[in-house]
Length: 291
Image (cartoon, rainbow, N blue to C red):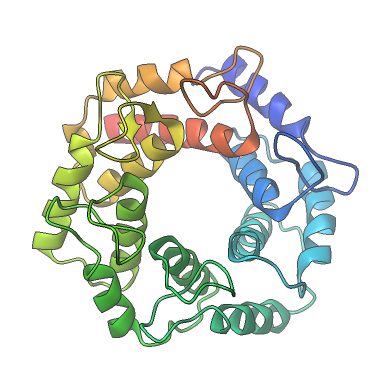
């Protein structure tokens, strides 16, 4: 990506930071989810400055210890890890604080089948929720409870089409649960050749004439979220070279706002921090695969 494009996206992202140091979505106050995406997108753009980082650290400190939804909890973990690794911004009181908070929060979401639910009210484990829990524990170098049981649960959610499902009752694979499942199984060293090849074949069929990837075989249109997760999973599976990379680049470019930021795709053109991360991340994955 040329410097002028990168600078436009960085300026868009910096403009989303609020007085409390956090970042907003398309409306409303700061929240951990969009703060994490904004910081990761700025890092991809090479524009995560100390000023932005230290303001964000102040916001993140206020979130630690609070009862948060799983996606917000994991967003704090990702953001804290990024800030401390890239800028040296000290976010945590002690490492033990966030470890205890994360462990207690995740234990409340762990279900008898070994997976994790997305909310405390849900009795059903979620493939995406399990992905969030596993990658958070890995990031903080904490043990994953009953890893073989977790791997067995995730493998049981692969369907004959090669894709994985979000919930047991679903019959047809989806792009995003497949990407999440591949990530979990790779962390647990439980993605055997047959599983990987089936998942790769499924994901490759999700690229459509637009160049992007669809969320599901029954959805005709591509979207930027599914495109990013498919590219990431196909890269992990070692088959990213098999996609039409030029078409994928065209699709990502179509999601780009000329003033900065990315939207989600057709009918969802308003840019935000989340989709800007997917756009920059997708570009980065394609560039890395080309070299």
